[in-house]
Length: 153
Image 1: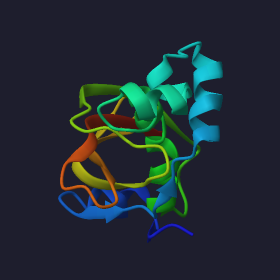
Image 2: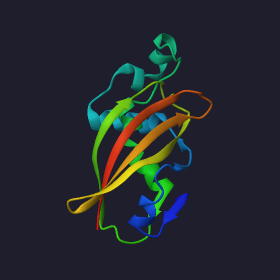
Image 3: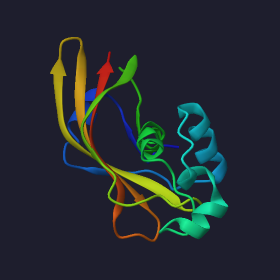
Image 4: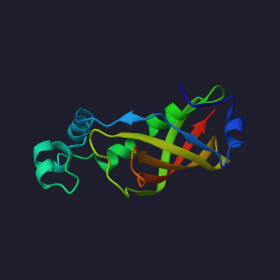
């Protein structure tokens, strides 16, 4: 169930500056392996636990940065629900993305979202979200992004 429900897009727009937080999500080796297969990115630091234990500075495999980024949609769905007036929401783009810290396999991540701006555009409403994915037990975020989402009524 989402952490926060909004009755409408107008209510969402009124929440500029407020932070929303998702639930924790486990990052398993199986999830990382499935992402590696889907993207053809099978670098050993992601898919070879024995080699990663021996040679990686992290002592274990890590999630792909793009996997962490791709989880934003799921983590957002855990964070908010707009009850009415939205026919479709699409990822419109990203203005800035950084991966300051790794996501270790076996760890838990969650996202913090802050609505930075909300405006009407041609045929849609555009939200700019500040997103930060954090790993449980780490002081440094794993992914920070400026994310644009368009909501169509």
